[in-house]
Length: 499
Image (cartoon, rainbow, N blue to C red; front, side, top):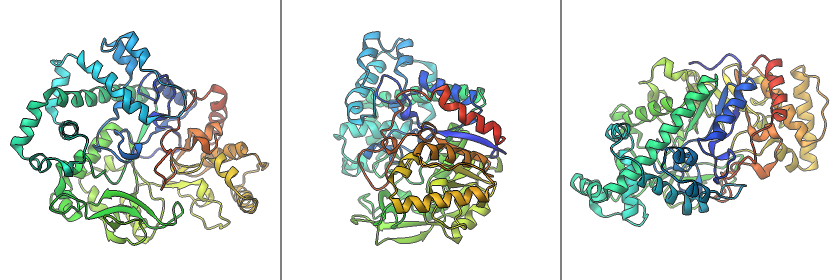
């Protein structure tokens, strides 16, 4: 599946879908959203990582890189399957509005445990899932987290911390029901996800997934494979990931993720990464690799540093990481190449053939040479009005000072002239949303993706993430699915520009 000739997509994470249960799920609203996309000629639905979120509620920090988020499990379906009662389902309702992760943590797992208590553990498909080993490290990790009071794995008893085989078997035996509960969550999630994906695909809608470059330190990934990361003998991090000062943050971003020991990965033929990529390519139709530039060169900071200013650049695995992938699988990868670009990243993109990203919100600084201007696009790229890390278009326009707005407006006008687009340029933020949608869909980019906020003309109250800030992120939810009226203009543009 190569990048399409000319198609459109919408970015909307599962968590942002509306319902009565505090966070979007794989239930009715997800199916309705897929139908709305298909009905309006939109052939791609882009989401953020589906993983179980961890510190900061970020989908880019997870306890297991291949996990599914238990919060996304459709409770209504569990009720239909006899695992929840009508009264229990009603009690699981949460207030409308932004996602309250604290309330979810306090209530949702209790509901899921109730459902598990009624689940038939001798189910043949469930047995096969457990036996496959897919969620083994995750289930053991989460079981141990419960036993050790939710402390990070480097503070567990030595035998479990260092994964002594006899100690692990005893943990599984002594806490077998808990171990099966975590297996059940992944079984239910993936069963529901596969059904939703098959439904969307049947409508002609492809799912664009997202995988972070890095994994969380306190995760099943690091606990099960400490030799693949830069850790000391006590399994503490020696180096952590981040980026130097940039557009988003003047002191850089100190992500705190452990750094890969790429020599160790190279020695075993990148087996762990091959498994991870294969899982992603099975889960999604197309896969966006976040922070792709870190595969050419990555930025590492000493563990314990207060910020990311005093870090160092190191060489990454480059194209060797993808040597085991077939050309067919490579054709389904999108590279997130935003941020600090250099000749190394550009060369890596060229050698892999992966399409990079272009973001319209980065385009209008007054320079006609700006790579993010539609007039400078190559076909093999994905255009976005903005991403989950940006302002919404309306929010960005509202945030500009008078001087900034004058430069922005004149830059937009100049680009419209270069593109031969005769558009009356107003001053309303919502008007710029429509204009940005049009510019994206009219561009040479083979794929144009619009965040749902920019379809609805929402401002920064609906922003998904503000990089460098730990609170208030990942909470955006739709009050209701986009109306036919809201989608009508997008459909017309798709038809007009041959997508």
